[in-house]
Length: 319
Image: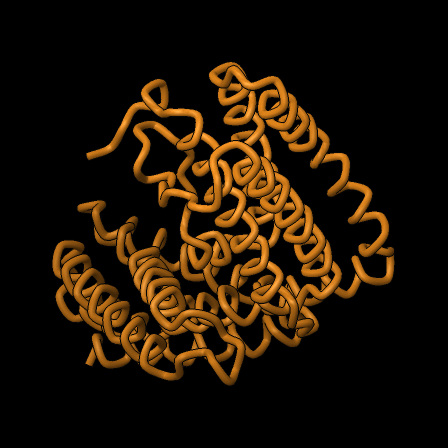
């Protein structure tokens, strides 16, 4: 059973504070370990913040031993109703380095509020002063973090980390997304337009387009997720890559299938052709933006392939 914070005794409040500092220190250590390879300067900042938390923990333990003896009761944050909660580190890491930094700031604010509430609950002057000092320290941690960032995140280090961040974004999001978008946009052209010209029916073309898009999305999603686990290539979590690839494949195919919601076959076909042209230009822009491929070369490669598939679909449907 969880207890309300107002029902905690002074030994339990100090024990909770010790547990909280231990947990936060380990979170900062996890951040540092996980960021070290790609963001060494930011990892050093979190390493020093871990040391700060360890200092707080030792001060709290000394105070507990002075007042209550050697045995510190086991009380964790989940044992107290409405107490601070922390997201799993693996989840924070997957959301990017800026999210990690914002999460660290929120941790300091939450801990500051805890110490302020705790100080108001204790009667011993020395303990109350310690908790008040720790609340003030947490309040200034954002400034300390800024100073550490200025020390470790030099312009050169920041540039290197920005490059690493872009490289990871390209590997984990852009590449699987682009692969899916190209497959969905190009490979579904033939069946959609073959069905359209064979039946002269918008409804038939729509059904084929939806089936082809969803089928290709599922297939590409599983293929990407099972291609590798990302441990050697640095391509990130396979499930995330599979979801991105599958969704973009489906979106690429559905884009030129949805115009066939229009009952008029000629109007629907003309609009579908326009959507195809836009899709191919978007793919060319993404390749230029993130793959450093010259736009004209990217457009030529993508458009030639798309036009070939488009013609095949029309010829088969008209035969």
